[in-house]
Every structure is written in C-alpha cells, then in structure tokens.
Length: 169
Image (spheres, helix red, strand yellow):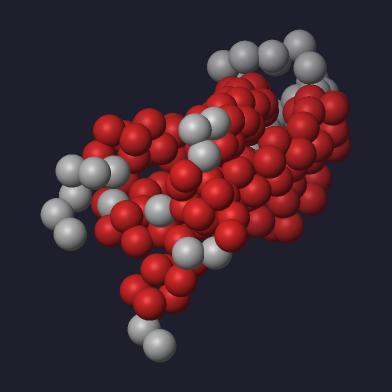
C-alpha cells in the first residue's frame, strides 16, 4: 500500500467523511484550531521576546516561562487534535499542498529548537535576568529562531486555506 492509498483511506473513515459532509464540522474545527494556534504563537512570542530582551524585562525569564509555557502545551495539544481532524478530512489535498508541507517542516524545526533550549541551554535559566546574569546569546538565538519558525508556521497555515484547491493534482 503506497502513501496515497493510505491518505485516501483516511478520507473515507467515519470521522473524515463526517467532517467533509457536515455543514458545520470543518468550520468549527478550524475555528478551534485557529484559536489554539493564536494562543501557541502569542504565549511563545511573549517568552521569546523576553529572551531577546525586547519585552518584559522587569520579569525574570524563569518566572515568565514557569507561569506561561503550560498554556502553550494545552493550546498545542488542541492545535494538533484539530489539525489532525482537518487533515483526515482532506489528507490527499493537504499532502500535496506546499504551504502545508512547509508548515509541518517548520513545526518540526520549532520542536527541535525547543528541545535544544529545554535540555541544553536553559539548565541555568533560574539565574537569567535577575540583575546578576544576563540571558546568554545561545538562549537569545533560540528565542529568535523560535519566533521566526512559529511566524512561518502561522503564515503558511494562513496560506493553506487560500491554496488548497489551486494545487495541481
């Protein structure tokens, strides 16, 4: 079985057909997806701008991250669930869409960046921005990359809707 057969079979599942045929299911799922992405991007932007020293400098990075990043995980989970539902409904079209493919690549890059930040760079994050120690260049670079990667994700996500049915099949 090749990948296109698998993708086609996803579209014919009960959930795929329901989302395709329902008047309200796809728009409702898309609304929740957009809200989740806005939350992911907004909270990550706040944290990244703090890393870059462009906002929230009165607050220590560790406090800001501790208070806000759990919201990212909740919103990201919602985005994954709703994104998967939209994908299942039109898997073959999404798989051919260059903006969707680019979005997926940049989500993976953002994830790798986050892992590097979490497990390599931020081991001493409790000391950053407390007046004693500034945020290291490597952490600022991760913040800049994160903000860039998630901006590409949002832009590509927006363009998916404009190009879904304009891609040659």
